[in-house]
Amino acid sequence: MSELTTIARPYAKAAFDFAVEQSATDKSAVEKWTEMLGFAAQVADNEQIRDFFANTFSVQKAADAMVSICGEQLDQYGQNLIRLMAENKRLTVLPAVFDEFQRYVEEHNATAEVQVISAQPLNATQEQKIAAAMEKRLARKVKLNCSVDNSLLAGVIIRTDDFVIDGSSRGQLNRLANELQ
Image (cartoon, rainbow, N blue to C red; front, side, top):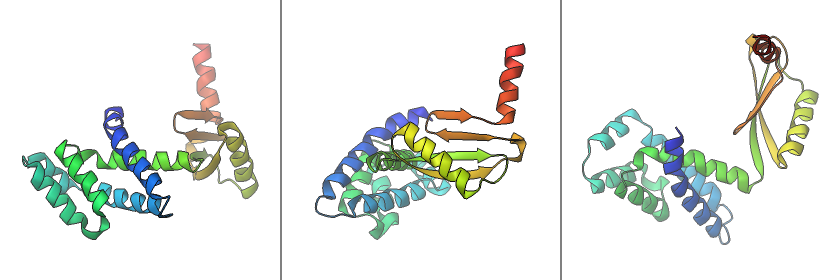
């Protein structure tokens, strides 16, 4: 997966930088690019499309097919990105490009997506406290995605990017077991 990220990052960064540059004259440019890349990523992630890319030897055919399928969802700049990626035989990494692009948008907007997994549903006060603590820790706004995992017994696990706080009973028991061995 990290190889895909490494390949996708320059395309995502270029698209993001261009979208930010465009936003000087069009305030919705970043949103438009998000929609374009999201749509193209969904198309590229389709099994039949992936098979087509794998069996197509013509770069031009792959680019034309992708642009044709995406149709009006892509503006001329989006089409240029697709053609460039096709030229470099990188259309299959479009989903990773989209993921990286979204990460750049979140960084630009100074927001972080934080996954909170709890043993029981959190109430609004608990969510607010976690959000406030994570905003302080990460020095940016956070968006919580809360879910329940009954196997935790008690507590929460908080994840964002490569940062994890395991405050679950299961995690504490696992750490204790490791120390006792």
